[in-house]
Length: 155
Image 1 (cartoon, helix red, strand yellow):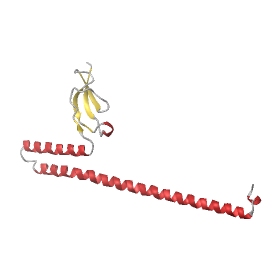
Image 2 (image 1 turned 30 degrees about the vertical axis):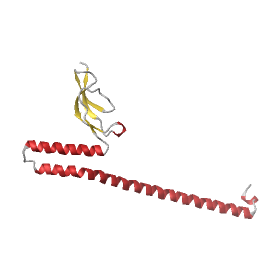
Image 3 (image 1 turned 180 degrees about the vertical axis):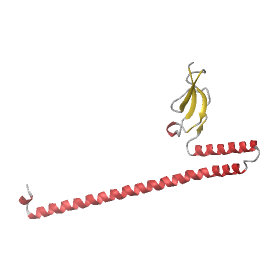
Image 4 (image 1 turned 90 degrees about the horizontal axis):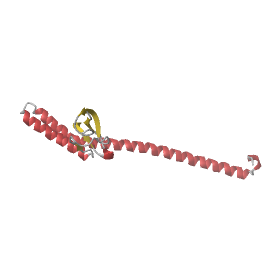
């Protein structure tokens, strides 16, 4: 049926219904656009808050580094002890953030899930870690980085 074959009242009713549906569609599209913008703004604010939280955990480490540098002319043994304490403090911050330091020992089997081979050397038990060049942080799905290791190879 064409528009001319419909009674005038029915045509007006259908046009009104189409206009109503178009208004509902526009309102829904506007609501969705506002939701998208609000969600993006909220995500940005959460990111800012999280960055501030993490940075706040590092402030005591930075303060202690400043103290160590202020006493750089002191006894080298005392300075080394102070730096070790600051490193332990930094490791504790990383652990609280969910990325504990992994100190793999030489002799463990090379595991590509937790190790990154940076070199190989002949000798030893092939396929085992000979030296840890850089420690790994985190584990499983929460691994921040693998340990960089030197691996033994055949001959």
